[in-house]
Image (spheres, rainbow, N blue to C red):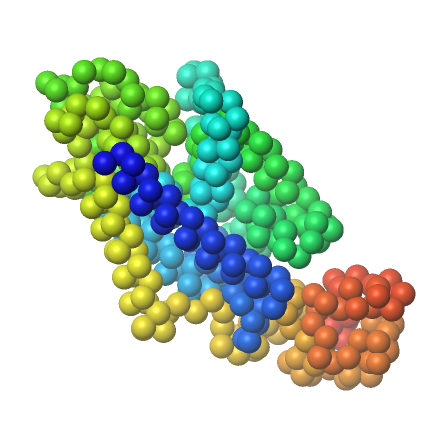
Length: 381
């Protein structure tokens, strides 16, 4: 059973990880927009929490988020209530990336390392503080303020080249390297101590019908369950695992050697195998996504330029062309190019904001694409 569960879970995790990586690569290579590929921000449940402040106040979604974020958040909340933090343990792409480095570390060092129990207990509260700070600043500013510091955002921009990552996601990239190097020694460093989405799931996990229960009459107290737990829960000391840190990875149940349901997964009063719980959770999440798509809610961005820009130059996005910007803001083309200090021949109307800098630098013209937004602001005053 252990091998079957592990293979199944790794298959699921790697397939989803490859899908997310493919989206990230295509977004960088093809671009975004109506004819492009969604940004990974639009596929993250946390984007819905970040936009919540705007939505409550009657404003639009913050940049790079849309209805798809609400679908993923709603689906992951449903998953957490019925199956525990299965999203964290089975579906999260960044969790999988850490697991890959953890597996490499185990091969190299033949063991895992553990953080001092007392320090571990304190550090686990850090993610709740991070969640509160991010939501407060995001709701206050209406901007995706965490993006430059987001390690997975930095990872998803690697296909664009290291120079773009360092210019736009320096701190996120540094954090990414620290997390991945730490993962060679320790399990789920980011998940345990820093993940704001994990902190959110932790607050609602208490409502979950999913529980891991220990039968004290058949448990042999071998502590194998404690050793495999990636978030250092002392399972052998509990009759019911109530910790909100539990990632529903089910390693503890799978590794139990008694074959007497000494550790069992219960949803309500029903005992289920890890394979059944994992399969049911994945099918539930997939069903929510597919139904939402069929109902037209799996939109990663608005349908029109006007809905995206709403007259605000700060909402100009990298996939937008010079022509789209000129048209939507109703500005004079000649004045636009004059203010930019470049010629239309050097920067054709079809050029996107993202590509403008590279195109002009290739012609020996120093240019910062942020200048485009600044020019538009001046011209529409």
